[in-house]
Image 1 (tube, rainbow, N blue to C red):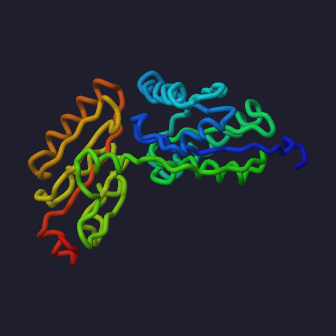
Image 2 (cartoon, rainbow, N blue to C red):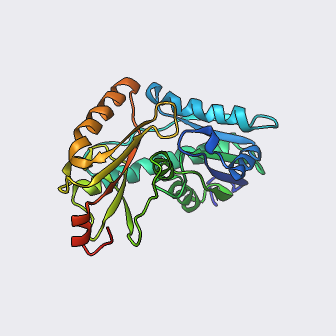
Image 3 (cartoon, one colour):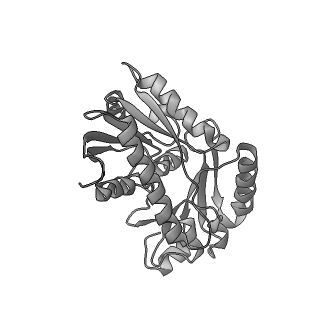
Length: 269
């Protein structure tokens, strides 16, 4: 390895912790949590202190043995210069470098570190991509595993007491940025995550059904459902008010195309 740090062996456990309700922790996730010697806890400023506090609550509630060492680190901000792909790439590099430094300075050889990930690590989360970057950098050696978690998409459907899909119809999962660029070709039902632009307002099918939720699984949870043309303004206002009150917002929604639109695309209504 030349002048680089000597490779050492550690274990990383990427643990899905659900969307905000500690009751959503699976037995597998609780067992994984109790196997950790160290936990990395991200902080995102005062506005999102709730997220760090909830991780602490989960630890206090479910760890039955000695408390792992909690290592807090500040998440760097992603630049917003218009080049989204490059900005995300640089941001991921910066976070991977933080992980790398913490693994070398805070985690001893043979120890296990836990990364507590909102929702499920496989659905619109970058932790596993960061792990791949750590592997490619080859400065620290480690093994890792992944524990799935309850996603906000699951909670959205459960809270609205509805299935995700319609009979015989697919569901497209995308982002607000993508939806704002146009309705996905051939789609009848679209689940939208990471929407900072309220892209549902740009959907031409005003007879579609909008199923929306914010802060899912938390005491702050907000739900709305109805004809898109009737409730789009209400959801936009509720979202703005909640963001002003809490300083941040996490929301997700599903749009079901109207029967006419779904049929015109050859999909089951």
